[in-house]
Length: 112
Image (cartoon, rainbow, N blue to C red; front, side, top):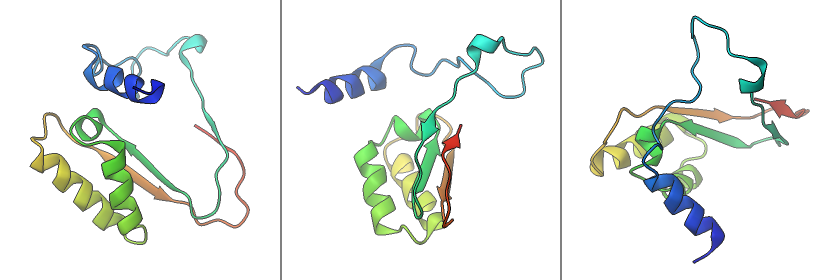
């Protein structure tokens, strides 16, 4: 078993996998040490898919990639097909998907 495969199994089966550790809109400001960022070197035509655990628990990343590759120019169709897969597999939780197709010629590093 590869390290990546073992990590994926751990992430998908950990008992605390659905516990919130961060949230938007809290009344109390978070301490500075709670703020996280990720630096991404994005390219023109990159696709970003952000989703809730209601999406990534019932379907795999490979499932998502297949749908994205098949319908890259039709993001509403991508969302529809991914949500359909989630529903077909039991939809254990609410499902949220955010898709972004970057179409800039001079992209800079994005900090999120």
